[in-house]
Amino acid sequence: MIDIEKQVAYWRKGAAEDWSAAQQLVKTRKTRHGLFFARLALEKLLKAHVCRQTKDLAPPIHNLIRLGQLSGLVLNQKQMDVLAEMNAFNIEGRYPESLAQAPSVTEAKAYLSRTKGVMQWLTKQF
Image 1 (spheres, rainbow, N blue to C red):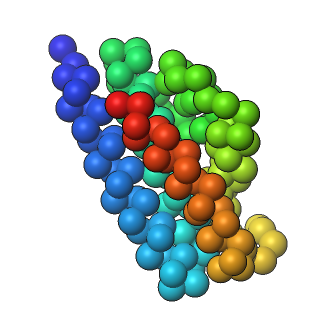
Image 2 (image 1 turned 120 degrees about the vertical axis):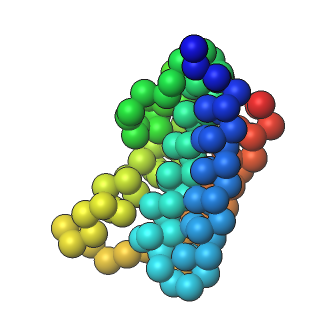
Image 3 (image 1 turned 90 degrees about the vertical axis):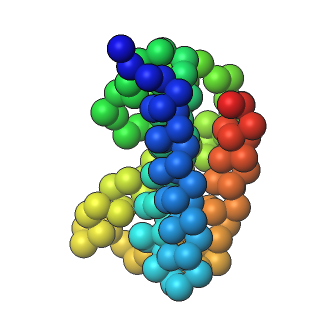
């Protein structure tokens, strides 16, 4: 039998660690990596909600929109827009050699600001 609360705690802890790493990386001008970790933090919070909703392990997928749909939460359009824009950093973090210039620190901070709002909302839903 799966201990769902243990799974939820695992994903939430990982999200907090990745969020901290994201902020530090952007602060040190490693914006592409920072935004990859910010996206990963969103993924992990969503997977915690999916576990709680489905009473099962989170699926091995990375699409934030799909995870949002599986979570059972009612996300508004602005939140879905943030998930959609942050989805891009899954690819950028993994295959940076095929991409354009990394976001500036100013751009990265704007992404982090929008992501922070969604993360705070997701956290309040537990």
